[in-house]
Length: 420
Ligand code: AMP
Ligand code: MG
Image (cartoon, rainbow, N blue to C red; front, side):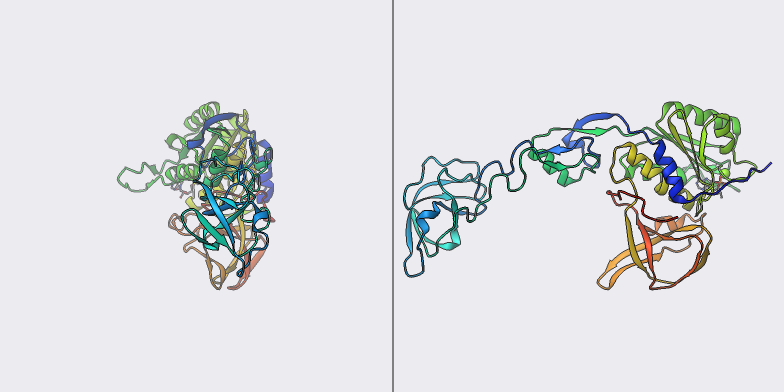
């Protein structure tokens, strides 16, 4: 007997998943391997930056009092007492009308409080004149102007960019505390599926979802535990998914979640006594996407249709994994753009259309990336975004402003902001 499935909104599906997410344990890794990971602790400034008053220019360190009254008509003369580069310390204290030749980045001599740029002087090897007065602290890079000791510089949950690496290095953190990356088991189901290396046979197709999801995981910095291609067989699927749920933090399957005679994932979840969070979502493609939960493990049953599978991963799997890794921005980045062409189809459910999103001097545009059926594989290769059209609408026109979710961008959104 066919069970009647009750469709829920995408936002509701996402929140049911996110409620089940448990953060991974932390681990300490080398700074040099930290790019792309997520900070599990905030980065505090362990000292002021810069740690001392320094010269931002090549020039002369002076006492500002000695520059008073300088003018074009009455230039003031200074004697150069010392010469320091970045990393050196001056060996003299300045007396009246004395200066130290100083290079960018060098610490200011003790009683100097201004820097005269080389271009602001007429100079010889050991003296110079100036034609204007300098205020106290003029042309200085002041201790603590960039960061004050004890300040939080980067929040916990931040994605580690090259810029975050620079900050960690500044404060001497050779080790970084991050969440462990989840072990994600991946299984493709379907008796029609061949391995990528197999020659094509009548009635069969190659498994493209397996390599695609592995790549989507790789984009999040997660290695795949590949469990292989499985034919549509209830016992074999049950064994494999059950075992995977014992060995992995998350299990992803593709295929077998529809209501066909050989779609066994619903029966697998039942036999596992898993809690089915939902099995029908008001979205196209991928309305049959099913997510279950057993023994603290999320079981993502993605549609076998390639486009639907891709969308299901980005909408549901990605934020769950990002949140498990402690990200404070787990959702796909959101934008709005001008529709570049008409889209006349009706949208009974929220529609996610593979799309090309581009910024031009005339504005930000987004257009469908070609053949956009749920079973399309080629359209997945095109585009860098989803156009999101709300359910219960039809007839979007070129020039309309539409919601967009961006793909392949490292940093996400803090919230899921799309209605529906
Ligand atoms: P299913 O979700 O199992 O009903 O599959 C829906 C459609 O997606 C069918 O046309 C399948 O042949 C196709 N399909 C299923 N799994 C894969 C896969 N791993 N790679 C490519 N296509 C697939
Ligand atoms: Mg199938």
